[in-house]
Length: 330
Ligand code: ACO
Image (cartoon, rainbow, N blue to C red; front, side, top):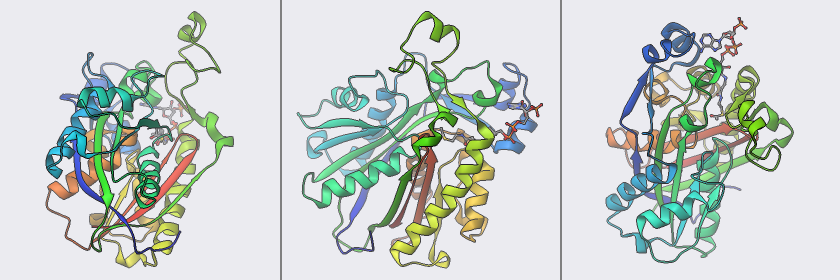
């Protein structure tokens, strides 16, 4: 795909972050770890944790309401709800359908998209196709995860990494120069076992044994994931830039998936960007999976840092393995 005349744009954004903050000091009391280890290996200082009675669709619906309000739209003004998540309320119905119920929309299509932490960018690319083909006029795209409910809180190699949150975009066709200029996406399913939630599906249906063996929690070979993430995120960002016909020097902001500060730094270096052009919030929120990019974009705009015409590169990597990048003109 090359730079195009017709584009989709992000009309508005919304986010929801649970109130409860879990700091590295709190984690020191739960598992054998230290603020020093977590900070130097990941850059994370604290993360948000959903309340016991909060489910994924609650976070998603709250972010969606903010995005709708900011666009001056009502739920009936959208015609598709697309939710990217790795931690659905239920295996079925989809979280998108639960969100629809909570928003009280008219009848419209609603479905989930599962692409690991890359889900939001996959959702953006799918939405572009649907909008530009005329299938949908306006898409509500939500990236949301409550990883705290699928994390083994006794496993220090994973529990220090994740946080909960949601971000939402209202997407529609652009009527000016702003919008999605290019994208690049891919997957390598042969490496799926390096990052997965094994239990509860048809591979290991829920049973006493799967619960005992803790198969309903995130399993990850961290250092392997790390290596692939660094390689794929750098390559993807460069490929999307090439497809947009832009140079590295034209990038105003890089918004990388926020899994680990070292991965973020490596991706920034690959694009030869100074630190102030690389957006970081992993310190405050940890890895919120699908929610990291929409929350980062929302906060960047909120802080008044985005000027019309600026070039933003978003790039993500996640379970699958999957990866994707998008070049966007604000
Ligand atoms: N506190 C203290 N020590 C720890 C902790 C902890 N929380 N976790 C692991 N260690 C120990 C290990 O046991 C190991 O000890 P050993 O040498 O005695 O065996 C040592 O620290 C080093 O462990 P490594 O796993 O080699 O550490 P590494 O430098 O690779 O850092 C980390 C681990 C932070 C998980 C890193 O590999 C990483 O960030 N990987 C990418 C993870 C990621 O991004 N996942 C998600 C991507 S997809 C998505 O977002 C869902």
